[in-house]
Length: 175
Image (cartoon, rainbow, N blue to C red; front, top):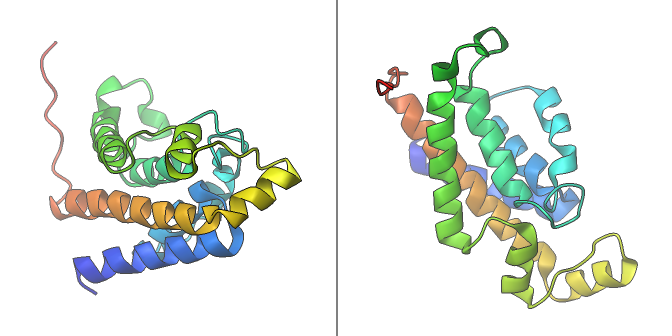
């Protein structure tokens, strides 16, 4: 499968996952992992609480941004034994920043609450049954699933581009 086919596949899988069962963070990670052949249920489970700006509060950045960032960190982050080595995290931080910047360019913000206001003119408290019903009536499921698909595509493009560099080390500036 070529790069464009993988990017389209991750978009479709992430969108379908979000439409079927929700949780933007988990669906983003699950789609990326599936396309790349990663079997790690623990990472997907760990992302459960990141939906809708953490715990469905809207008061945090979009779960799709969280999920994509976790996937980037999975492939390029530092290991536990490297925690005392500050430089080992630079690659994942730079790639995560790139993802964040692309996300904000596409959606004008990274905060879930603000995305909802931009898309629907208001924020929906998804713990409130009336708000949940109203969100579904205005097409929130479709809009959010599209956002999740686009986010998974963005994150996977960064991962594939970086993997294509043959795992070259990041040069650190002298401080």
